[in-house]
Length: 133
Image (tube, rainbow, N blue to C red; front, side):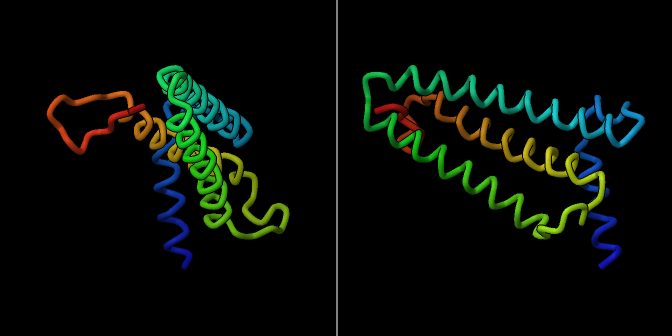
């Protein structure tokens, strides 16, 4: 179990961005991870705004995208709670905020990529997203 935790921590730390690797204290690493998360969320907001703009005249498409985004946010929050299930304060130590931010950033970047696919239209690809048709 200890080996698993060490490997998991190693993987998480390998995901740390360049700004985090220069951080000297846990507080600095937490702040850097938080900044990376804010940046990823800003990119997701930008892509969503483009999709919302494209669907201005398509209320059904807009409603379905909003529903999908709401479901994704619920998934994201539940996923993080499942990763670190203890409700006990301090159970995961001072690194916990950094670890949560890293996982949220990973999930958010994946969501940005998924949303980005909706912006692409490939002529002749019958299975490609036809947003917002």
